[in-house]
Amino acid sequence: IEKYDKGMEKTRKSFSEKMNELFAGFREVDEDFFDDLEETLISADVGFDMTLALSDVLRDEVKMKNVRTGEQVKNVIIEKMVEIYEKGESGLSTAIKENPDGPTVILFVGVNGVGKTTTIGKYAHKLKNEGKKVLLAAGDTFRAGAIEQLEVWAERVGVDVVTSNSGDPAAVVFDALKKSKEENYDYLLVDTAGRLQNKVNLMKELEKVNRIIAREIPGGATETLLVLDATTGQNALIQAKQFKETTNVTGLILTKLDGTAKGGVILAIRQEMDIPVKFVGLGEGMDDLQVFDPEQYIYGLVR
Ligand code: GDP
Image 1 (tube, rainbow, N blue to C red):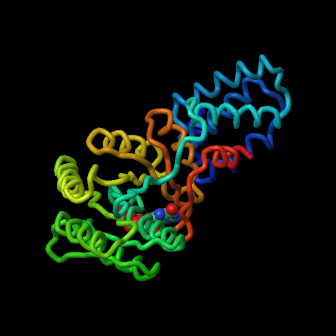
Image 2: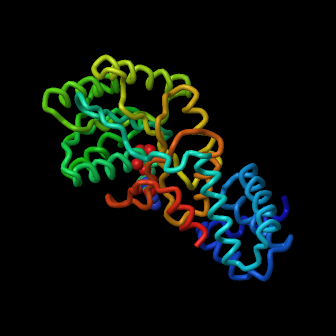
Image 3: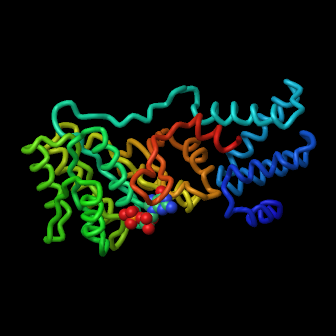
């Protein structure tokens, strides 16, 4: 454990910076190297299980293939990380499903502060650039300022937004669904509450919103995307598990990957559950949302 404490000094640096440091001091593939590698992976929130699995596989590879140079080790690390991430399903889909018969309804869920509202703004901008007609629904009527924040984003990127003063998310979602069908919107992006009096109420509220959507759109929301904050490391993993228990989460969005050392949590989440990461957030601006490409991501971490 002590060696992992030492690693915490470096947590403010990015994962790739740490990997670079590891290889800058590279002499040979010995026990010290594996210690440093494990420390780097743990402090980047790759998770204990994933770190140990990776470390074991690497030890075997190194022996079998007679790996010697830092460059060779990097290549093996990339290859194995990608393999573990893909779990045998190469080219895991990051595409967002579309509803061919009406508006594609995307529900954004996640706890307060993870970047839900910002992500909706960025995604609306992306869709608008692709020529889509986009409507936002300000369904987070619980967090102070959430509605205004979504309105600001709608104006900034030039899309429409439905709000309500009633304080009832169900009413907002109902109105937005009606408008999106009547006026032929391609996409309806629904913001939801991230915090209520307690978890049970939050999940009940989400269920209610889901029922209203299912009444208007056969099969319900086209996608339910869980937004997670990468800087919270293992907490993001815990949230993912909790939401998955009660909500039909179809994809993940990991925000705040810019400059965090915790980016490894993507690998930990992937190891624990079969929900693909669809987008990553790399800043607060409207162009800072990117489609997640696992291979490119892992390559970027280790290069
Ligand atoms: P919500 O409560 O989940 O709706 O969270 P917000 O959208 O209000 O975001 C919380 C804070 O995180 C805001 O200050 C955002 O600007 C910031 N934020 C969101 N996404 C990112 C990101 O990808 N990178 C960075 N650096 N900041 C982000």
